[in-house]
Length: 326
Ligand code: NAD
View 1 (cartoon, rainbow, N blue to C red):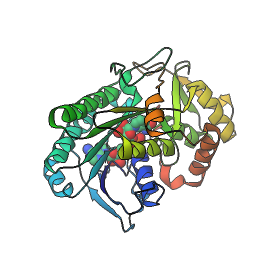
View 2: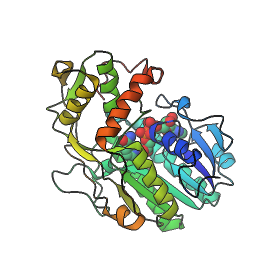
View 3: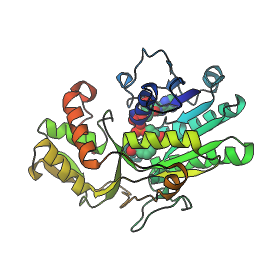
View 4: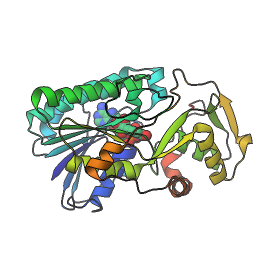
């Protein structure tokens, strides 16, 4: 198989590509991979094995249709990770989110259609469903995104589904819970907290810290994306959950413990505008249809993640300005 992976100089896409090229996905041992990435502030080329003989890297924008026409021919599948991904940045300004996440996805879908790509995996997020006080979202849940980031991802999902319905493009959509693991940009909650605590600096906790998130190891997310790539059905949506639900306060407590700090290192900050209270996906469908089960416990995964940041200062130094909450 020849796969185009977009956004794979970022956190999750790079993990997917590294794992695939390492031969960990059965049936993909001989796959060739092209990574297309614009190398925004969120990208790190050291996330990728650039010298690997089955990897080709193209620096470019998914919005660039002329470039897509030169890159896409000959690919059997697209796994689409590229996105503007940070909610706080979308609150500050939504334009880049609409351009990359909506128009970029549409440009990629058009190019996939023009060049007869077999499968298009649209990697999305549980945030498209909005916020849920109790229970879990199934894939039938209406989309009620609250942040401009989530709205742009929901728009991209709808666009992707429409290319299946209208043009018969084999589009499969995944909606995953919050990821953690090595190699994430230090603006996001876990790496921001870990890197600041390791340096003996305070961490900003939004509001009362009561917001609940479901945390899944990046390796489990990528494993699920690969299952959808191999066995998913055209036009279908697959929630990816099975992670651990924690309030932000509980997560902060765990990170303080792992970094050897106490609550004196936590400073409450005003809540994020429109902050969703709780996310929780129902992952029954992917478990039943594709046999997905997560393999990493939060305890072990968090310990390894903290150890990784402690050992890879080059990845996160310099950090974003202290005023950036997460
Ligand atoms: P990231 O911000 O770490 O990486 C995004 C990558 O996309 C970067 O390498 C960036 O350079 C690239 N990119 C951005 N705009 C581009 C453009 N116009 N053209 C080409 N490349 C571009 O993001 P991530 O956390 O790895 O997330 C990857 C995908 O997974 C996103 O689509 C995100 O919505 C989704 N997702 C993320 C999470 C999470 O917890 N991080 C959870 C569920 C779903």
